[in-house]
Length: 143
Image (cartoon, rainbow, N blue to C red; front, side):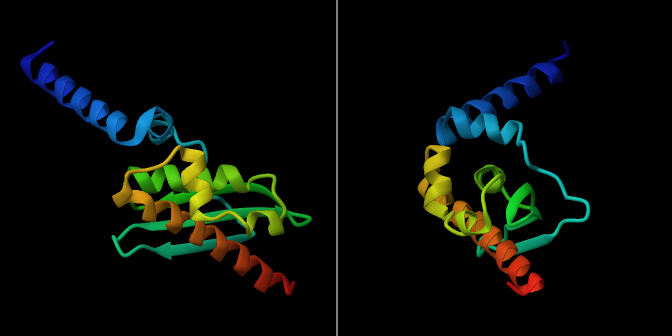
């Protein structure tokens, strides 16, 4: 390896170590490999919220007979927004509209094992995006 490769590997390792210390093992693993991160083709509903930090989280839903059959998300935000959007989709998938409407930011934080205090707003942003998508679906279906 060249000196530059060694330097880059060292920097990457320090970033990974810092993320692990700050976010914990569970959230860091989810950040590296989010399951639900994609822009869904032909969703039944979309909810998008903008955080005061500048992050955007958009949640896409496919709903079959009042049950969330599929969920995905897009974010322009940080690692905490990624893991929060991903967890919101995981918690919502397979739930009825009523059950998913109960998913709040605290539920996302608990499922993630917490986030640093200055990043907890990301879980609430993801929850608000989910609620927006649910509300849009209800409004569009006249329910």
